[in-house]
Length: 248
Image 1 (cartoon, rainbow, N blue to C red):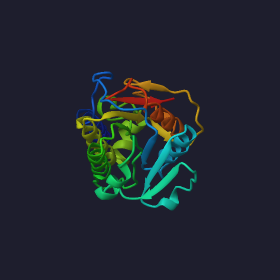
Image 2 (image 1 turned 180 degrees about the vertical axis):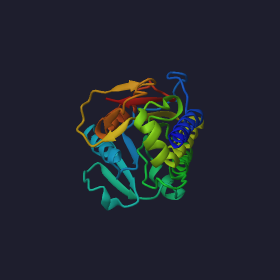
Image 3 (image 1 turned 90 degrees about the vertical axis):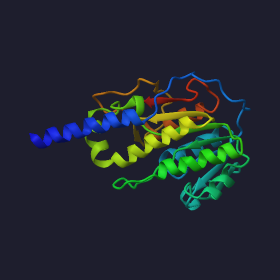
């Protein structure tokens, strides 16, 4: 019983910390910086599950796509409007080269280094933001996660008291740093917070907003639908300089 109580207190304390450290924002709280309709987009984290969906769906929508990947051969997508460039988000020169001449950037950056402190997400995002400001690329849409900032606890009890505190505490903590860096930028940014990700088909129907999710049950959404929502934010200012949850 004592061990259970200690674990419960730890999960609660971590959730409170993730709420305080993450982003809290109000949609429509800022006017957009002037920008044209994007045609050329850079996708960061293109070889991951959401990233690959972003590449395929962006091409289907007619965008000219550049994909940044440490291993370009891992993407396995070919298209006349797709350019795959080798680079690492932690290497600023390669990030800057990829950002140059783009109209917008979408980030589905992730990693699998779950069990040790890491700043891959935040430092990689810092490099992307710096390159965007250097080359005056205005629109930035970034995938983070439900469960941080004003969405803390909205992944459901299983995530709040087991998955996040046991498996993903360092990962989620770095995501709070990532969000705060984005919020401090002067870009036209949108933070997208999905629920637990699946490899299901795109439904094209999902809930989104600041209050989606559940304090009790695990909420889910396919990577395909997350990509669909992220691409919609390229020309939609509903969540300008704000974070929106998204789930089924």
